[in-house]
Amino acid sequence: MVIRCFTGRQFQGKRRVAPLLLGILFVFGLASCGSHSKSSPAQISSGLPAIGVAYVGPATMNLRQDLAAKSAGVMEVKHGDRLDIIETRRRLVRVRTEGGVEGWVDANLLLTSQQMDELQRLAEESKKLPSQGSATVFDQLNLHTEPNRTSPSFAQIREGGGLEVLAHRMTPRIAARPKTLVAAKPAPAPKASRKDAKKAAALLLPPPAAPAPPRDWEQLSRPRAADLPDYVAPASPPPAPLEDWDLVRTKDGKVGWVLARMLYMAIPDDVAQYAEGKRITAYLSIGDVQDGEILKHNWLWTTASNGVTAGEFDGMRVFVWSKSRHRYETAYIERNVTGFYPVQLAEIPGDKEQGFSLLAQDKDGVIYKRIYGFSGYHVRLISKAPVPKPEPPTGATGLLTADASSPARPASWWQKWGTWPSRLFNRP
Image 1 (spheres, rainbow, N blue to C red):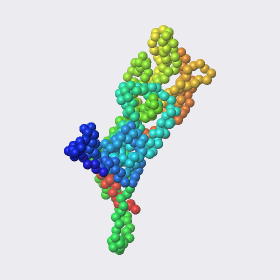
Image 2 (cartoon, rainbow, N blue to C red):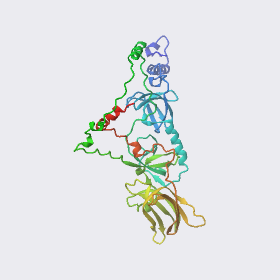
Image 3 (cartoon, rainbow, N blue to C red):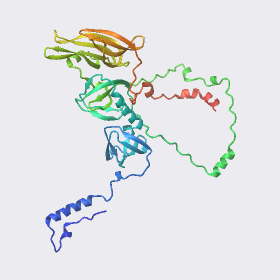
Image 4 (cartoon, one colour):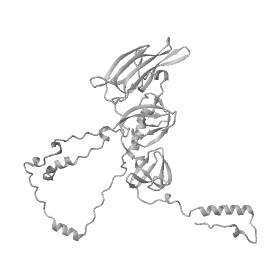
């Protein structure tokens, strides 16, 4: 309903209206003139049926009124909100919220039902994983649903925020690819008229038998590209560069993937100074030392050199606090190790030693769980037992490999041309 605007002259008559009442009516008239008789077009439901279901991936996301990236925002949705998919345009999809508001979003920012279930399962399974050490960030850091830069970021860790490292993965850095949220339906075949069907049936003849290929068909297909004197075999495409990702848990219980190079392990500086340019991947306290009024800890850490692609670390070291020199000294060091998580404390029954364990691969290729005992300045290997290779949590989505992520290389026209006799004469 449209409310008519009034002016001051219409209220002039035999009776004078109070100035206060006139001002209120004037302001009300201006507000009524600026209002629409109908709701905003962006909030009108189109009535299209839902063709799929998706969930919001980022922490917050705006629904756009149109396909253009600069179009006005309609509504802000939050991570985990359920959306109905009603239309798709390549990598853009039109969605509808539970409240009936519709808008356009990028498909790469949405999660499928399976991905949402896996993310929740990952959070549950990560509660059982031991911490590999606390870390801090010196800049805002995005928490991703998968170990991939193009995956949605559902939370952000503030500068100076703390978290716990749980697992580590190396995945290839790949470009973003369109995500399939709705299975494509084949286009319906055009219906032919009865007259055309009768004509086609009358002209339909049984197919002739395929002729036998000539005996020298391989020689007829020569020369091939490989037979040419100046032929150079095409070089295989270089593998995608690998990136280090850590599975972390925030203080409020959120679990996700972050770039490992953005984390700084929160081990004391008087120990971290001995890293020698290597990245500290895990650390834990293996005992306390009371030096006067100062309480110090003995530390075990693991480090990884640049370019390490097998395992989580390639070196381990035990630091002890010297009361006489008032500094940390190395009690045990081991290099050229192919080690895996978890690194954790271990109980040694019937002994007063402090124990710790880790997984390491020997020269025979078998992975063993090593248990060490630590007492004073002495570290000794107590036992080792073979164990299967550690697997990622079952809820970890998007654990890509180089083979799975690299697109298949299309065959060259020489390869296609060289196989035409077999495809011609051996067709069904």
